[in-house]
Amino acid sequence: MPRERTFLAIKPDGVQRGHVGEIISRFERKGFKLVGMKMMVPPMELLEQHYAEHKGKPFYPSLTGFMSSSAVVAMVWEGNNVVSIARKMMGATKPLDAAPGTIRGDLGCDMGHNVIHGSDSVESAQREISLWFPEGLVEWTKDDEKWVYE
Image (cartoon, rainbow, N blue to C red; front, side, top):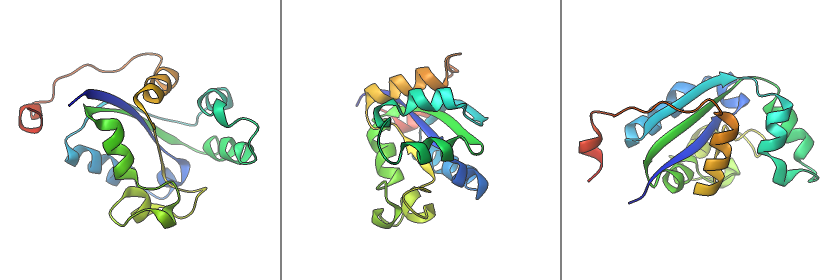
């Protein structure tokens, strides 16, 4: 099982509606290790880099406007297969299509307010982590790792 890192961001709707603690708890209970976290109102320059592949699409202005409208909680989580498992934990992008028990299925309201962003691949995670955490991450050993990973 490959040890990976993924980038997750609790979007302004998730922060404003008080879901930060619950979302963090879900990833902690799964056994993943938090190695970076900060709360910030992302500057437009960062969002333009982060969402560069969407530039020119009809939803781009509303997406970047929404993401810069209030605080987000940017995080990096580490664990075996964390990218694909985090995607499953988040659920489908459209909350109406997301299964109950997933973050978006339980907490999301609509496509534009779906609570959380997560990297869609290991490569995307590496790019997003370098954008959002240029200062680096915390290296530490979690005492319960021997109980989570073989």
